[in-house]
Each structure stands twice: as C-alpha cells, then as structure tokens.
Amino acid sequence: MSSSSYRKAPSGFTTDQWEEFMREGFLTIENALTEDEIDYYVDAIDRCCANDSTWEPGAFYGPTNAVEKDPVLAGLIDHPRHVGYFYDLYGELLKLHLSQICLRPTGGTHSKWHQDGPRTLPYRVFAPTLPMQVKISYWLTDLPRPKMGNFVYMPGSHNTDRFDAYNTHESVPGEKITCPPRGTITLMHCNLWHRVEPNESDVLRKNIFLAYCPSWICEADRHQSSPQWLETLNREQRIIMRSYDYGYHRTKPQASEFPLFLDRETGRQTDSDDFPDLPMRLRKRLTMHEKLNLMETA
Image (cartoon, rainbow, N blue to C red; front, side):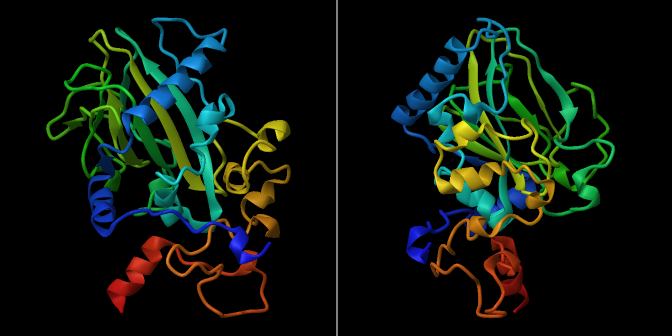
C-alpha cells in the first residue's frame, strides 16, 4: 500500500489535557457529543438489549465485547473523536482491551474502591508513571446530582498502590463525585482508585465504555474475534482488535499492520530515516509523550 492509502493519526491530547490527565488520573471533556450523536448511541444500546435474551428490564446490564454486538458500536473502535488519545499513549501497538455497554437502573449495583487491572501485581510495578490501560466513558444520561450511579474517584491516586478504603464503599475526604451532563466523555488512568455510587434515582444510567492498552497486554473480553465479523471492519479497526491466532504476534505484529497511522503532523510512516533498510515493523516510532519528554530536555 502507498502512504496515501493510510490515515493520519487523529488529534489527541492537547498539552493542557495531558498535564491534567497525568496530574489527576482523569480527564473530562463535556459537549463531546451532539444530541443526534447521543441518540445514535442510545439507539444502538437499545438494539443490543432487544436482541439479547439475557437482558432484563430493571436489572443491571453490562455485556462486554460490545463492539461485536452492533455496527454503530464497532464504529467506535477507531473513532477520530477519541482514538487519537490512545494512539498518543500506545502508538503503533494500540489495542482495544475491552468494550462494554453499561446500564445502571434504580437500585442497581454499586462497586467498591478499586483500581483496574491485576490486583496482586499492579500495573504500577512495571509502569509507575504511564498507564498500561486507559478507559474512555461515553456518558449518555444526565447525572446532575450524586446517588445516580455516579463515578467517584480520588484525584491523583493513580500514583500510589495503597488506598486505605480499598475494597470498601466508604466515602473518603477529597473524593470527587462526577456529575457529567449527557454528551460528556471521560478518560481514566487504569491505576486511579475509584468506585461507583448506587443509583437511588428514577433515571436509568446508560454508558458505553472502551479501554485501550498496548497490544502485548492480554485482551479482557475475548480471546479472538469472529473472522466473519472482522471482515466487516476497516483496516485500522481490524488491527486495533488484534485478533491473532499466534500469541507472539501481540508483541511483534505482522508487517501488514504497519503503519497503523501516519504521523499526524508530517504524514510520514516513520519518524526518521535511521536504519532505512529495516522494515517498518522493526523501526522505533516515538509516542506523543516521548516527543514531549524530548522537547522538555532539549
């Protein structure tokens, strides 16, 4: 394929957004969706419910691998609205870790304080600064006050493995109860300590979650994707799903999967002309945060 056949990486973090995300472990972007887009995704959720014999009105509903359940949800795999944030972190080895629909009804379940990822050997042991997984939430319901199934987090807590309220549902000083208007998207660092409040309102909370990670971390909601379904996706979506039948391809993908995206500024497939005889799959490309570090130390 010629370079004109590939897409440039969509926009990602601004400098201010990156600083806030790394400081707080959380980033809120209001008005990310129009009313029509909100309805578009709510309709997709409603179709999934109608097509799933396990769905029960009034009960918590949280099926994973949601992108395989409806073409509208599949369109989120590489959506330019958000995929650039994750490409900034994971570059050419970007992978969809998990996708989920989440309905939290009145009286629905809540969750205790926890971090995402492995508990006995947290991601921070190996990656004390950068997240090994980031989750984006599409908020499709207005949550103007607490006790509506709100997401609660401790700002800056992604920098520690110890949290005294771990595995409890206690309210703690300094926590932030989020009250996002519909159409908001949020990004969460996987090491952030968080919980979910019970829903004591008469509003059914509707969300779509997608988590991304490096390709060499095991996917969370599938082993492989349906080959027939993969054929319905575009090139970038198929790559980001990382449906391999040989395990080591997660670490060293095949040559056909490079580049995932062209550099968003230069439109190039590579960062430099170093080692021009090496194939692209063996050539280091800098991620956004590496470029920022180089600028700061220059």
